[in-house]
Image 1: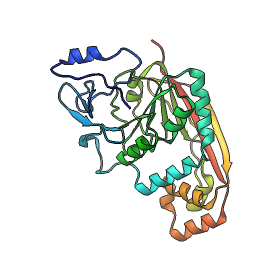
Image 2: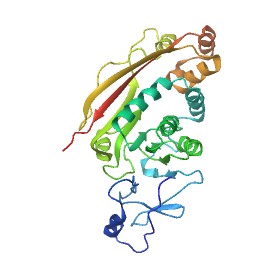
Image 3: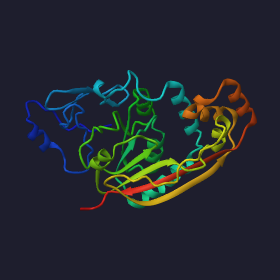
Image 4: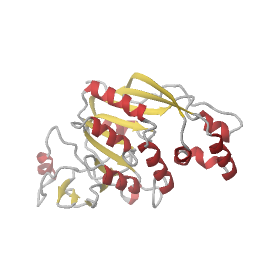
Length: 291
């Protein structure tokens, strides 16, 4: 959970900023006015008196209604439950192992898990690297609530990835797994010399699922996506095949957007065939240049 720094009382903004440690602490900022947020009991407050409650589960909701595109943004409950089942079964463990190896080599201390969902990757990384301070954000309140309940050692917030509620240069690493983002925001919250770890689908990812719903399979692009302000420094390809039991195969189909393409008879036929599933990821590392 986010540390308590003190009570505003009648402090001015300059005085509040003077209370913020120069390093070693990730600081929330107000999503409405971008001033620092300090914790007072069960609320986070800024000098403009905007306040945000700390939920019973230990997360804070920093997604104001102005930043919502729908009443309940994010994946639906069925997709979240399916993803939780699939990930917790350990089927994507090779991705976790690769992340642990790279983070350990860089001696990362503060990590932002962008679009963290139910917190699976945050939780796995925190368990393997207990000295690593992790903040997870997601636009889905339901996902963050579930994450906070299961992984209390991680700080979670409901927030937009397009307007991150963190002070500049808060993190020396960012993890982005399929999450949308803005280049400028990534650069703003990343420290000089910091790293972005971006996981995306490589060409053959879930090709068997695609073949079941499309007459012609279009492979994912192998192009390295440029990010303004960051340098691409490394690519690791993670390819493996899964022979899934029926329940986990159903969970995989349900948790991905391709699942909507199946008619009930087509899904039943696909599940009955019990195909081996190709998993194919790129783990790209970008770096923010030193001044």
